[in-house]
Structures are given as structure tokens and as C-alpha cells.
Amino acid sequence: MASSWRTHGQYEYRVVTIDRGTSVPDARKRLTEEAEYGRWELARTRLYLGGERRVWLRRKIIKATSTL
View 1 (cartoon, rainbow, N blue to C red):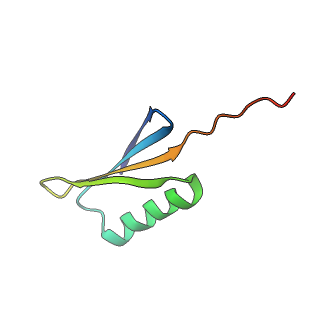
View 2 (cartoon, one colour):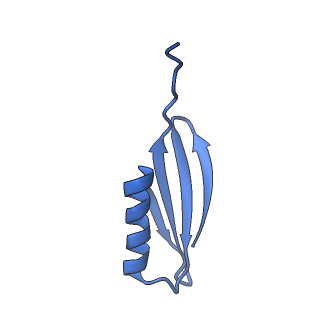
């Protein structure tokens, strides 16, 4: 599985590529871990010819302001 990062507007995006040899339970486990620990949510999924899957995850960009 491979991934890449992008930012757009108020959201940060991560594209996860799942090859065709990865089982559905393994892919589900990986995406569940990303959602739980990284606070990612599912934005889009795409299935390509040949069995490769791409999953777009997104999360809000939180801008911290100084309180000093």
C-alpha cells in the first residue's frame, strides 16, 4: 500500500493505494486504523481495472493560535 498527502482548502487529503493482492479484511483493518488514530474520514473510493483501489481520506486542518 502506498500513500500521498495533499492540502486543499480547509481539508488535508491523503490518497492510499491498495494493490489487488491485498485482501478486503486487511484493507479494511488498515483504513480503520487510519480513521481511529489519525482522525481521517473517508472522502472517496475508486476501483480501477486490474483490481487496484485508491482511497481518498480527509481531515480538517486545525490551525492553532497562540494564547500568549
